[in-house]
Image (cartoon, rainbow, N blue to C red; front, side, top):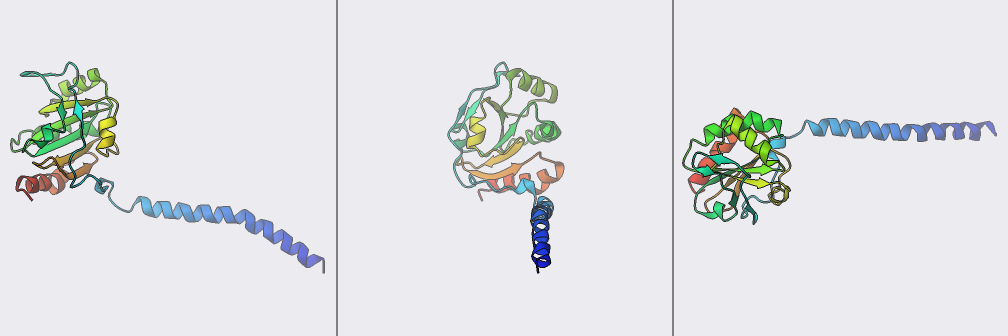
Length: 197
């Protein structure tokens, strides 16, 4: 009679020891399947359809272009009746280097304005980056504290926004622009904005 309760007591600790292992295995499987699910560049933005957040950024200190100092920009700049593309970048961002030649090419299209939001960067590093790779931006705002980026809902750099003529955000691209995403995502969104859709 005493042998049966003793066996039950031995089984209980074994089950209790296996329970955390079983739970861990189930969570690991869930993470593995969910990590491969979805496209991180399709992260939704709560700002789509809303006016750009209020901001006023000074230019990157000491950044000069062919016509003198490169200015900063503000939310009012983006409400002047032209389509704007705002690229959030930093000199310390490796993917920003990858996409930069595409931004330089994109800046040749004079139907819209391309702005750079320099995120959590030092002025000398930003100047060096643009000096080496070229400055495709009409204006470059220095967001040294990252506060404006937070207001824009930036998850990380690079990110690119298309802003309509009325200053409303119409599209957000998360991650570096590639030749494929430029052709399939960004340019169609810019064309839609230009067409007033």
